Image (cartoon, rainbow, N blue to C red; front, side, top):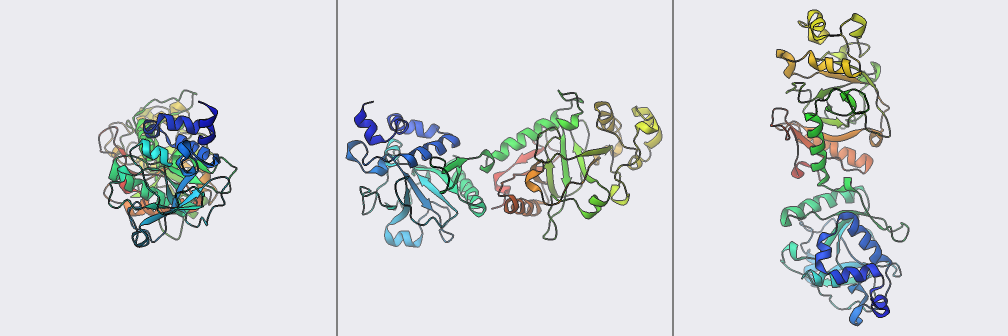
Amino acid sequence: MNRFLLHFCGTLALCLALALGGLQAHALSGPEVAQRLNQAYLSTPDRCIGNRAAYYCSGVMFKQILATDPVPFWSHGPDAIVRGAERFDYLRRDITAGPLAQDSGYVFADRFTAQGQDKDYQLQGDDGMGRPPELLVSNWGALSPGLLPVQALFYRSMPGLKLALRNQLDWFEATGDWLPVLRFDATATAGQQFGFELRDQLYSGYAVAERINRRYADTASTCPDGRSALYCNGVIIRGTGFGAAFKSWNPSPNSVTRDGVSFSFVRKDVGTVAFVGSEGLIFHELGRPVEHDVRFRCAYPANAGTNGIPNSCRASCRSENITTVATWRSRYGSNPGGSCTFGDTPAEFQLNTDVRLGQSWATSHNELIIGAWPQNIPRQLPIEAFFWRVTVGLAGARYIQNDFLQETGRFMPILRVDLSAADGSKFLYVPADQSY
């Protein structure tokens, strides 16, 4: 590639993108889209190939979405219809941007890339030669969204992320494609204005559900590091309820007093079909590194009614010389709720499951006691997902999800849970279940 072409493309990466055309653009991942936009922001040529305006090969065509704009986001609002064009900010390192007041929006491809994809657009008025901070893109009318050169959605703050996720779903339902959601920070170091995080994507919930279903199906009693299954498989789940008076991820006053937050441990061999709560949270396996490690205290094979006892953990089964299924059933078979407690060694924790096998009460939940953690640390906890129980609890799960988003700025997926469903689908992710 000669110096003439490099001069007008601005960077080698942009020239290669142009040479590859639309096929390259279709294959870009979310991180690659962010990288490409950052490169375009940094590129400052006076003209592009063929003496074209700078926006053909550099800068970012950046459309802010107003709260009053129609849905779906690619529709024209009243102002655009009267004007005959949509207002786009033209962002580039050497251009003073106009006011960036909105929390969310979308990005058009540069003009050459759009042409390479057969998705060209036209400007109204200024052709971009003067590199103004705002360009008017002529209305596209009722054109199918799949024919528009939208590269990405962006957000600037938590409310913007929520809107970007809704727009991501609208685009997917209309086109079958997932647009990446990017974080935009105008004050970031040059070249880092756009960033991609997998957890900001609506589709990330599919991977979460798949991971949890795999753990549910894994019945190994010992983890690769020698610890019990609690640290690598199974699913740790807790019904919490919801409401303005408390945060669903905080221990209740009763849990703090008895130093015990009650969960259930569900797994293919545990036999649980019914568990407590219509909505709540799912923890990662306890062996996963997190900012705040929660404390395992004890396990019960059945619902032990720990809300009513001063210390969440009764005497250990080991202290009562109960180390086999036979000795446990001899002592507690007629009163499983009054059981002694099992520890987290592989043998003890597996025995907590084995005593349930073949018992009529085993379809009900067991009880796993986690020590109370500090209040108001949602970002530090090993929360993996929120859930609802198929027929009830969706409104509550959405409330918790939205509350968590407002507190942390993070999207956490909601899963449907049906332990009577077929293997592989007991934990199901549905984009339409999410709160917007």
